[in-house]
Image (cartoon, rainbow, N blue to C red; front, side, top):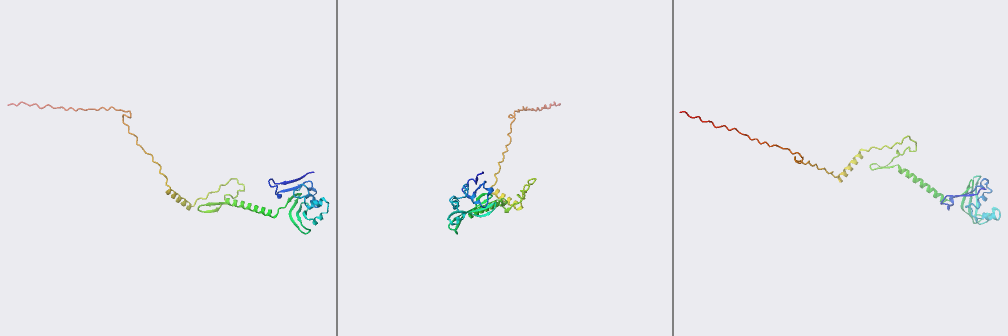
Length: 244
Protein backbone atom coordinates (compact mmCIF):
# COMPACT_ATOMS: atom_id res chain seq x y z
CA UNK A 1 0.00 0.00 0.00
CA UNK A 2 1.43 3.31 -1.04
CA UNK A 3 1.39 6.16 1.43
CA UNK A 4 0.19 9.72 1.22
CA UNK A 5 2.24 12.50 -0.22
CA UNK A 6 2.50 16.19 0.46
CA UNK A 7 4.08 18.53 -2.05
CA UNK A 8 5.14 22.09 -1.29
CA UNK A 9 7.40 24.66 -2.83
CA UNK A 10 10.68 25.16 -0.92
CA UNK A 11 10.80 28.24 1.27
CA UNK A 12 7.06 29.01 1.06
CA UNK A 13 5.48 25.95 2.72
CA UNK A 14 3.73 28.23 5.25
CA UNK A 15 1.49 29.45 2.45
CA UNK A 16 -1.34 26.89 2.00
CA UNK A 17 -1.75 27.96 -1.64
CA UNK A 18 1.65 26.42 -2.42
CA UNK A 19 0.85 23.05 -0.79
CA UNK A 20 -0.85 20.00 -2.33
CA UNK A 21 -1.71 16.59 -0.91
CA UNK A 22 -2.69 13.20 -2.32
CA UNK A 23 -3.00 9.56 -1.26
CA UNK A 24 -2.23 7.21 -4.13
CA UNK A 25 -4.07 4.29 -2.45
CA UNK A 26 -7.41 6.13 -2.62
CA UNK A 27 -7.15 7.62 -6.11
CA UNK A 28 -8.27 4.55 -8.16
CA UNK A 29 -11.41 4.11 -6.03
CA UNK A 30 -12.26 7.76 -5.45
CA UNK A 31 -15.96 8.66 -5.98
CA UNK A 32 -18.71 10.84 -4.57
CA UNK A 33 -19.59 8.50 -1.68
CA UNK A 34 -16.07 8.31 -0.23
CA UNK A 35 -14.53 11.65 -1.22
CA UNK A 36 -15.27 13.16 2.21
CA UNK A 37 -13.58 10.21 3.93
CA UNK A 38 -10.62 10.71 1.59
CA UNK A 39 -10.44 14.40 2.51
CA UNK A 40 -10.61 13.61 6.25
CA UNK A 41 -7.45 11.48 6.21
CA UNK A 42 -5.07 12.34 9.05
CA UNK A 43 -2.19 13.02 6.66
CA UNK A 44 -4.21 15.72 4.87
CA UNK A 45 -2.84 19.12 6.05
CA UNK A 46 -6.05 20.91 4.98
CA UNK A 47 -8.33 18.97 7.35
CA UNK A 48 -8.97 20.37 10.85
CA UNK A 49 -9.47 17.64 13.49
CA UNK A 50 -11.62 19.91 15.65
CA UNK A 51 -14.38 20.17 13.05
CA UNK A 52 -17.90 18.81 13.45
CA UNK A 53 -17.28 16.23 10.72
CA UNK A 54 -14.77 14.47 12.97
CA UNK A 55 -17.26 14.49 15.85
CA UNK A 56 -19.99 12.99 13.68
CA UNK A 57 -17.59 10.36 12.39
CA UNK A 58 -16.38 9.36 15.89
CA UNK A 59 -19.94 9.16 17.25
CA UNK A 60 -21.17 7.41 14.11
CA UNK A 61 -23.95 9.89 13.59
CA UNK A 62 -25.81 10.68 10.42
CA UNK A 63 -23.95 13.32 8.37
CA UNK A 64 -27.20 15.27 8.16
CA UNK A 65 -26.74 16.13 11.84
CA UNK A 66 -24.15 18.74 10.80
CA UNK A 67 -26.93 21.24 10.04
CA UNK A 68 -28.10 21.10 13.63
CA UNK A 69 -24.64 21.76 15.05
CA UNK A 70 -22.61 24.95 15.36
CA UNK A 71 -18.92 25.32 14.65
CA UNK A 72 -16.44 24.39 11.94
CA UNK A 73 -17.50 21.94 9.26
CA UNK A 74 -16.66 20.69 5.73
CA UNK A 75 -19.29 20.11 3.02
CA UNK A 76 -19.13 18.71 -0.49
CA UNK A 77 -19.99 21.67 -2.69
CA UNK A 78 -19.54 20.49 -6.29
CA UNK A 79 -18.92 17.17 -8.05
CA UNK A 80 -17.77 16.45 -11.57
CA UNK A 81 -16.87 12.79 -11.60
CA UNK A 82 -14.34 11.31 -11.88
CA UNK A 83 -11.94 14.26 -12.01
CA UNK A 84 -13.16 17.25 -10.01
CA UNK A 85 -14.53 17.58 -6.47
CA UNK A 86 -14.96 20.87 -4.58
CA UNK A 87 -15.12 20.91 -0.75
CA UNK A 88 -15.94 24.01 1.29
CA UNK A 89 -14.76 24.84 4.79
CA UNK A 90 -17.33 26.97 6.63
CA UNK A 91 -18.37 28.23 10.05
CA UNK A 92 -21.94 27.34 11.00
CA UNK A 93 -23.88 29.55 13.40
CA UNK A 94 -27.36 28.13 12.83
CA UNK A 95 -29.10 25.80 10.41
CA UNK A 96 -29.55 28.74 8.02
CA UNK A 97 -26.50 30.93 8.75
CA UNK A 98 -23.00 29.92 7.65
CA UNK A 99 -19.84 31.79 6.71
CA UNK A 100 -17.49 30.46 4.05
CA UNK A 101 -13.84 30.25 5.14
CA UNK A 102 -12.02 28.40 2.32
CA UNK A 103 -12.60 26.17 -0.69
CA UNK A 104 -10.59 23.10 -1.68
CA UNK A 105 -10.67 21.32 -5.01
CA UNK A 106 -9.59 17.78 -5.74
CA UNK A 107 -8.29 17.20 -9.27
CA UNK A 108 -7.33 13.63 -10.22
CA UNK A 109 -6.93 12.79 -6.51
CA UNK A 110 -4.69 15.75 -5.61
CA UNK A 111 -6.05 18.27 -3.11
CA UNK A 112 -5.35 22.01 -3.51
CA UNK A 113 -6.63 25.05 -1.69
CA UNK A 114 -8.45 27.50 -3.94
CA UNK A 115 -6.98 31.02 -3.77
CA UNK A 116 -9.05 33.82 -2.29
CA UNK A 117 -10.00 36.97 -4.19
CA UNK A 118 -7.10 39.02 -2.77
CA UNK A 119 -4.57 36.39 -3.84
CA UNK A 120 -6.08 36.23 -7.34
CA UNK A 121 -5.98 40.01 -7.74
CA UNK A 122 -2.43 40.15 -6.40
CA UNK A 123 -1.30 37.44 -8.79
CA UNK A 124 -2.98 39.11 -11.76
CA UNK A 125 -1.47 42.48 -10.91
CA UNK A 126 2.02 41.03 -10.54
CA UNK A 127 1.63 39.20 -13.85
CA UNK A 128 0.43 42.38 -15.59
CA UNK A 129 3.31 44.44 -14.16
CA UNK A 130 5.80 41.78 -15.25
CA UNK A 131 4.49 41.77 -18.82
CA UNK A 132 4.40 45.57 -18.94
CA UNK A 133 8.00 45.72 -17.72
CA UNK A 134 9.06 43.18 -20.36
CA UNK A 135 7.26 45.15 -23.07
CA UNK A 136 8.87 48.40 -21.91
CA UNK A 137 12.35 46.86 -21.96
CA UNK A 138 11.75 45.43 -25.44
CA UNK A 139 10.49 48.79 -26.73
CA UNK A 140 13.44 50.62 -25.15
CA UNK A 141 15.88 48.40 -27.05
CA UNK A 142 14.52 49.84 -30.35
CA UNK A 143 14.76 53.48 -29.28
CA UNK A 144 17.52 55.59 -30.81
CA UNK A 145 18.65 59.15 -30.18
CA UNK A 146 20.52 61.51 -32.46
CA UNK A 147 21.52 65.11 -31.58
CA UNK A 148 20.06 66.53 -34.80
CA UNK A 149 17.13 64.15 -35.35
CA UNK A 150 16.03 63.54 -31.76
CA UNK A 151 14.41 60.27 -30.71
CA UNK A 152 13.42 57.65 -33.27
CA UNK A 153 12.67 53.94 -33.60
CA UNK A 154 14.99 51.47 -35.29
CA UNK A 155 13.36 48.14 -36.08
CA UNK A 156 15.55 47.26 -39.05
CA UNK A 157 18.59 46.20 -37.04
CA UNK A 158 16.64 43.52 -35.13
CA UNK A 159 14.18 42.50 -37.83
CA UNK A 160 14.23 38.83 -38.66
CA UNK A 161 16.53 37.81 -35.80
CA UNK A 162 14.36 34.78 -35.10
CA UNK A 163 14.64 33.53 -38.68
CA UNK A 164 17.58 31.39 -39.64
CA UNK A 165 19.92 33.26 -41.94
CA UNK A 166 22.97 31.83 -43.72
CA UNK A 167 24.96 34.98 -43.00
CA UNK A 168 24.54 37.64 -40.42
CA UNK A 169 23.87 40.97 -42.05
CA UNK A 170 25.37 43.97 -40.35
CA UNK A 171 23.15 47.04 -40.17
CA UNK A 172 24.09 49.67 -42.69
CA UNK A 173 25.23 52.97 -41.32
CA UNK A 174 23.31 55.92 -42.71
CA UNK A 175 25.50 58.58 -44.37
CA UNK A 176 25.66 61.92 -42.66
CA UNK A 177 23.70 64.83 -44.09
CA UNK A 178 25.11 68.18 -45.21
CA UNK A 179 23.65 69.86 -42.14
CA UNK A 180 25.40 67.37 -39.86
CA UNK A 181 28.75 67.85 -41.57
CA UNK A 182 28.49 71.65 -41.42
CA UNK A 183 27.41 71.52 -37.80
CA UNK A 184 30.32 69.29 -36.85
CA UNK A 185 32.78 71.52 -38.73
CA UNK A 186 31.43 74.61 -36.94
CA UNK A 187 31.74 72.96 -33.53
CA UNK A 188 35.27 71.83 -34.27
CA UNK A 189 36.18 75.34 -35.44
CA UNK A 190 34.85 76.89 -32.21
CA UNK A 191 36.77 74.38 -30.12
CA UNK A 192 39.98 75.08 -32.03
CA UNK A 193 39.54 78.85 -31.53
CA UNK A 194 38.90 78.44 -27.80
CA UNK A 195 41.61 75.88 -27.28
CA UNK A 196 44.29 76.42 -29.92
CA UNK A 197 46.75 73.68 -30.43
CA UNK A 198 50.27 74.46 -29.14
CA UNK A 199 52.78 75.08 -31.90
CA UNK A 200 55.29 72.28 -32.18
CA UNK A 201 58.86 73.33 -31.29
CA UNK A 202 61.00 73.91 -34.35
CA UNK A 203 64.38 72.24 -34.30
CA UNK A 204 67.38 74.61 -34.46
CA UNK A 205 69.60 74.01 -37.43
CA UNK A 206 73.21 74.65 -36.49
CA UNK A 207 75.78 75.14 -39.16
CA UNK A 208 78.64 72.68 -38.98
CA UNK A 209 81.78 74.23 -37.50
CA UNK A 210 84.45 75.21 -39.94
CA UNK A 211 87.53 73.26 -39.23
CA UNK A 212 90.96 74.65 -39.99
CA UNK A 213 93.53 72.77 -41.90
CA UNK A 214 95.40 72.02 -38.74
CA UNK A 215 92.24 70.54 -37.13
CA UNK A 216 91.64 68.47 -40.16
CA UNK A 217 95.09 67.07 -39.83
CA UNK A 218 96.00 68.34 -43.22
CA UNK A 219 98.93 70.66 -43.31
CA UNK A 220 100.08 71.95 -46.64
CA UNK A 221 103.57 73.18 -47.10
CA UNK A 222 103.21 76.13 -49.26
CA UNK A 223 106.42 77.22 -50.75
CA UNK A 224 106.61 80.88 -50.82
CA UNK A 225 108.50 81.68 -53.91
CA UNK A 226 110.28 84.94 -53.86
CA UNK A 227 111.04 86.04 -57.27
CA UNK A 228 113.86 88.49 -57.52
CA UNK A 229 113.74 90.31 -60.68
CA UNK A 230 117.14 91.34 -61.76
CA UNK A 231 117.18 94.16 -64.15
CA UNK A 232 120.03 94.37 -66.57
CA UNK A 233 121.76 97.70 -66.25
CA UNK A 234 123.05 98.91 -69.50
CA UNK A 235 126.49 100.57 -69.35
CA UNK A 236 126.61 104.20 -70.14
CA UNK A 237 127.54 104.99 -73.67
CA UNK A 238 131.18 105.54 -74.26
CA UNK A 239 132.28 109.05 -75.18
CA UNK A 240 134.13 109.31 -78.37
CA UNK A 241 137.12 111.75 -78.43
CA UNK A 242 136.73 114.78 -80.45
CA UNK A 243 139.08 115.26 -83.34
CA UNK A 244 140.18 118.75 -83.86
